[in-house]
Length: 83
Image (cartoon, rainbow, N blue to C red; front, side, top):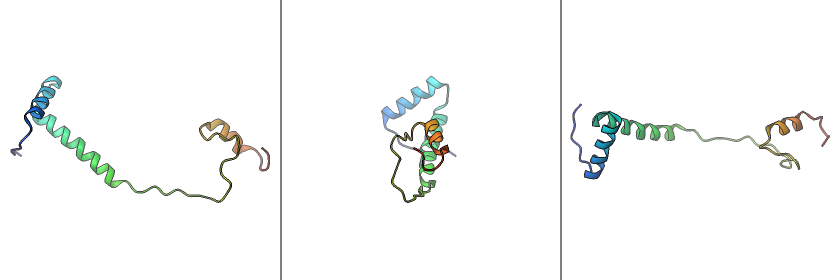
């Protein structure tokens, strides 16, 4: 489809330079840019809120490093009641 749009002169010049540098047509550059910005918008709108399940307790045990998965696994595999 053909249409007419008005662009800032410097923006058009930059887009033409980018098209030339990448071996694409100006139309392809503009279409890619529009697709990219519209897809980012669509992704943001389709995200559902995250719901975290919480349980009662006293928080993280002393000495437990949640960033150390091996140590966390070892801690979880210990019998209940041992430190």
